[in-house]
Image 1 (cartoon, helix red, strand yellow):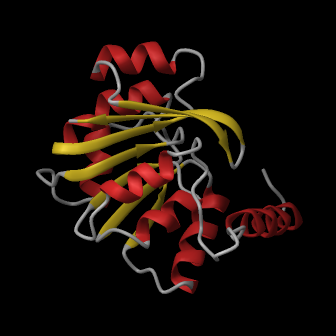
Image 2 (cartoon, rainbow, N blue to C red):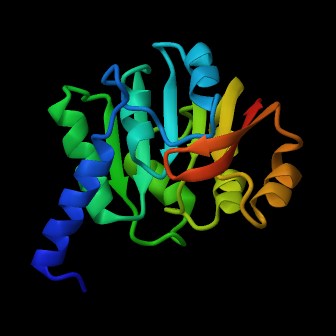
Length: 191
């Protein structure tokens, strides 16, 4: 259990991390070098984005797309991201805290997306709100429209690469290099 003082400190730290922007005041997502530019060329203002793991990427997507629904495993982080979006006037972002990664995906989808037939143009996986990333991909990639994108950050982590390739095949593109939180790989599939 986090006491109130610890929670306040966590929120302050999370807010500070979230608000780090580049020299132009842009919220850059923590992706491998080159991935953000690639995605910027692909994302259209009409895109609907489903994201697992919220943060700067949530703000960045919300500035570029029609709608983004994000699922987050940290209550503090979910609250901070949603508050920052509202502070910036971004009301097309809905961040949902998921406290049970084992709850049936269909129940979550009905609770938060409401329309089981809704398809997304981009699935972005950079968190564990629904367990390991390969499990997220297995459960959610069907919701991506033909021609849509599946993006997995930290693709270089143990077990993520092999399991995701088994589900989706080889990625269309892999970006390798520095990200906001160290070195990483970001993989992209076009469905």
